[in-house]
Every structure is written in structure tokens, then in C-alpha cells.
Image (tube, rainbow, N blue to C red; front, top):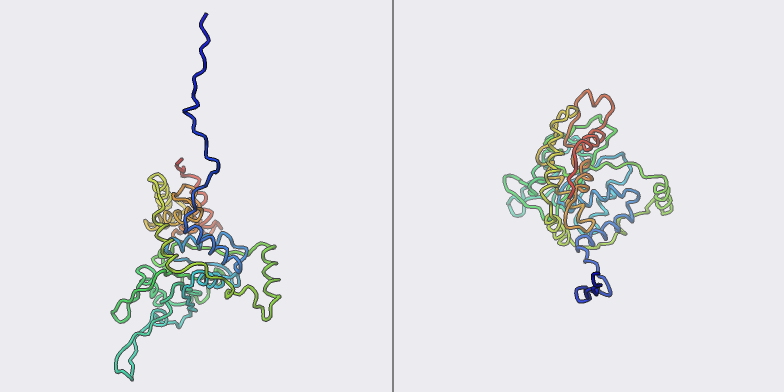
Length: 342
């Protein structure tokens, strides 16, 4: 009979957990943007996903094309956002007679000093709202190409850099097409995101109507009440932190596969370019940082597909007349691409 051996003493190998567990500190940029979200949500109600996408674009340092019917708060959103970090805000109402110099600026002769001086246009701001951008002809629309890509303006051969952060919000009305000039593909590609604003749900719409109509002259939900929670330097620091978010090779490959699939799909006549894949990763990094993570996941890329690619692809004519939308096609395309398990 085998003797019964005593159980070994393993007490010295066990390290008890600490009495109190302290979770890792949330990145400062995540905290700052949570405060920005809360401040804007005070006056921009019932559009959580729209606000999330706009904040992601600000983190990524990109530009946004806002599309929605009149009266849904597009201007309200941009003005409230500028208040949160003390940035300068300018609005341009695009019309058929608007000239490039009305956007960027021009030189004029100063009679007092007998010299030419530069009169800077409204693009010299932190947040620029180009309202109804498709109502201006191509000559004026193209005035924004350099400033959106290079963050500088050339006036009479002299380049003038803009003070960061700089972000362009351009709005379009999807209903009225008469008297409009569609944006060319090259300019659409300069926008990081195309964000669609729809009607709020009944509860939020009722709340907004009561809040606004209860004030004299309908002055409720004023953006002047939005507090400043950070500075422009905080925004720049957050953008640098977002760029440093880790993107593993498998997730980057996933973004590239999605973009390449848009070029090979029979229902898509114009697929997205390499800038589309870059934008997917940039926005995914912003989504990750907004949630306090230092790495991106395939879910972040999936969430970014619609706002990043919907304005970069075109449906084949026979598909477009069938009533299918670009979003429908992108959603079906996503189902054919296996996401990595990381």
C-alpha cells in the first residue's frame, strides 16, 4: 500500500490581490472629449451618433460634409462645438455669385500707406462652416481645396498658414437640386466624413420644441450658454494622442480589404481610393480614443465604414435606379469580408 503523502505547502507561491483595485487612468484626451460631448449635448439634442462622428473627425483633424434637411441644427452643432474650446468660428453662406476672394481673402491698396495689404477671408478660423456649399459654382468651391488639404491659403502668390486646429464643416441640402453645383469627386475625397443628420425621435423633438418655444423670441437652447471646457492647445494635444493609438497589422489589412472590395464590386462604378483606407484607420483611432482605448479593433473600422466611404463610392446606374442606397451596398459588402480576430 502506497503511503499517503502530505499536501505540499504552496502558501508561499500565492500573492494575495491588493485590498483595493485602482483601474487604469483614462487618457486625458478621452476625458476632455467627454466634457465636450456633454457641453454640446446641452443644445444639440437627440443626435448622439452624429455628435460622436463629428467628435471623431475633430480628433482625427479631418473635415466633415454634413447633409440633412433644413432646421435640424447643423449650424447649431458647429457653433456649439467652437464654444467648447474657445475656438474662432466663421460662417460662409455659399451662393451662385460668391467669389473665391470672398472665401479666402484678397489684397487691397491702402491709400494711407500707399501699400498693398492682405485682407484675410473667413477661412482664417478654427471652425469654418461652409453653408450650402453646392450652391456656389466650381470656381468658388475649388477655393477650399488648398485650405482643406494644406491648411494654408495662397493670396496673390503668397502663402498664409492657418492657425491650428482647423476644421471645415460643409452642409448640403439633399432635397433641393435646382440651382446647385454638385461637388466633384476630388473635392468630396477631401472630406474625412460624410455625416447624415436625420429627424430626432419623438421624445427628443418634443423636448426641443418645448425648450425653444418657452423662451422669448424662440431663443432657447442658445449656444452662448455652452461652457468652454478646454483650449485649442488641448485639441491639438488630443489629435496627437489619437494619431498615436495603436493599429495592429491585421486590423489595417482589414481596412484595406474593405476599400479594395469597393473597387471590385459589380454594383459600384467608382470605388474608394487609398485615402479612403487611410481615413478608415484614422477614424477608427478616434473612435478607440473616445472610448478610452489605446488600440483599434475591427469593430471600430466597421463603425467608420459608412461615414468614411459613402461619399467616396458611386453606384452603378442600374443599381442606383433600383432604389438601393450607397449605405445599403456598403453594409452588404461588409458581410462578405471576414473580420480578423484580434
